Image (cartoon, rainbow, N blue to C red; front, side, top):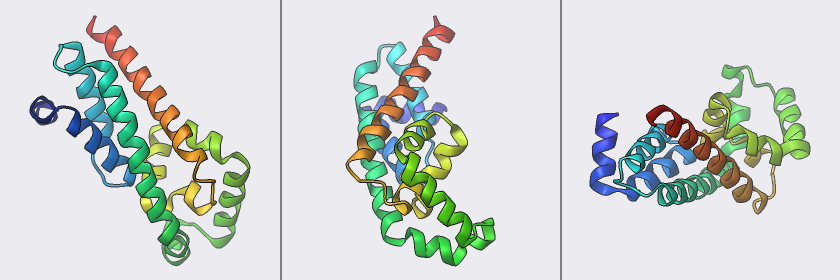
Length: 163
């Protein structure tokens, strides 16, 4: 955490944006930790909370679009070829695709609040919304709202802890 704080102190909102963007694209970067660190630095006056929130949401939306594209281009063939190692059969994949066609927008929004779902949904090879062909224009709004809501909850918790 100390190294992340130092990076954010040196490079500011760029680290917030890039860290969250890379995590949302599926790169194993501690985006949540970066958001928490930016909340701490905002509390100490080094960053503006609103600006950190904006850069975090922008990073999440842009990274998610990159991850969506990667999942859309290579996701289904990848899952069909290698999914059996994770117990993903063609039947289970078909059920998941049907689920996302019916409830995709709600699931994408809610996944930003649940750690396990967020990590799975961020994996560029198995983006469930990309595999289920969730309309592209629905995704940034729902991901952005979900990510912004999660960031606000973290900030509210930080405020209670550090006040």
